[in-house]
Length: 124
Image (tube, rainbow, N blue to C red; front, side, top):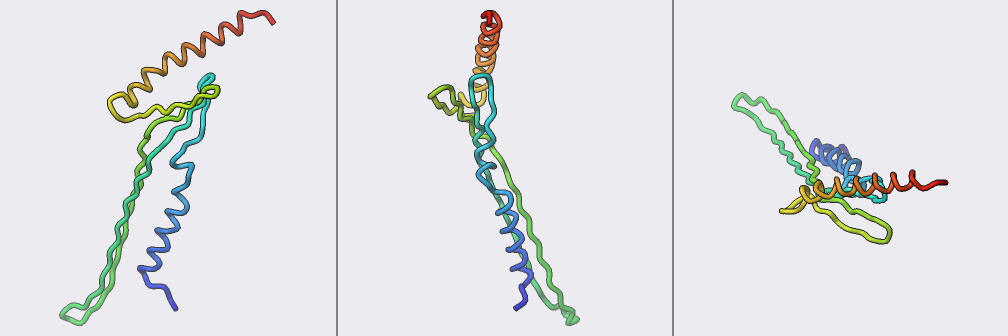
């Protein structure tokens, strides 16, 4: 049996979702910041719409048509930050979210640079 236009459309949308929505989309790749390992955590939004129709006009001309659209949105929720045996979540939303993370960043960098200076000062 031949697939209808709508079945083909649904198949294409399903394949798009299968290829794009993965764990790596939600939990990003870890990166190092001095002694800290940071893992970005995201929220993924998905919106889809489709429609179609067919008809005949008063001159007995007939036709069919259809269309579809979709969109993805990625919203950073925060970072999982590990140091030694401690794990913290730094959110990017809320009254302390992203601004709090950005406020901590200079302190983290200063600590990292201080440690590097101390390592250089110790004779081998």
